[in-house]
Length: 335
Image (cartoon, rainbow, N blue to C red; front, side):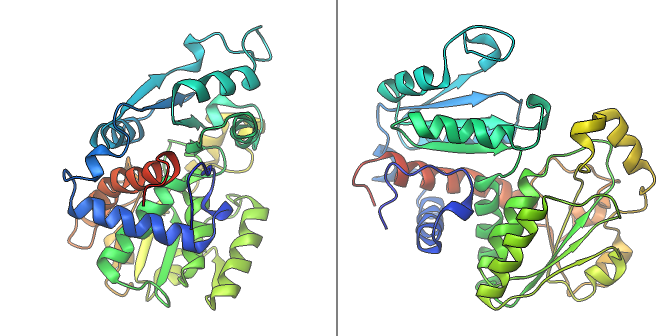
């Protein structure tokens, strides 16, 4: 499958063949990390990174990825640029996308809920850049999805479990005051059932995710011969699970009531934590998390740092998955 020039805004936009190609290349790049021809793929080429929201691993992994491919990643903050917004005059998306397409080979954008007014605004912005740019647009996490994290999660599970078809993952809401985005969890909700994983989603009443995403995930699961279920009982949810992903996410009220009020909603569920007690109910489950982990709230420290935790492997896989994405979408004729 030819992925050159293709945008990656969510894995749902790509066929499974393309995703498999990324995963296979990422595993090869991990094994032969500093060897040719991988180190020459983006030689002398520039990848632009727009950060509407700050990050740690995203910036580190994308900059390292560009460097290891022989290229350069340029860090940009829109607030320091003359870009048109609702409140100020400046360069339009059409103009910015068209000009950057003359300078670089790809553009990554990170825009989460703190940088938008309504859910979906970040996705709209990415797709508008994709409309006008002649270079690939890659989501570095936006208000709806985080495709690079989803691919890193899947890559890590495949490395530790082999074929994930028929294995069971429980994604469980975990208490935190951090009021986290939906992007990472919704990406996995879409992606992992496509690979045949039985998916259990567990959360307290009032912390529903995007209903359209849930419906698509159910269809993905049905097509792959997998199960998708939702429960509000965390004890039942983890019984027999092969993988547990315990992470906080905001409520649907976040955009209307603000971050502080959403923190108050979460306070009544401080007992929602992936504890050692819950871990004992699983099928010796692997623990995954996109990080940073809110230890002692989302998950017990001994689980997050336990022998079945693969959070560091997955964090490393962000680098390799992103290298593969960049190589396949930004380097003409390279496979």
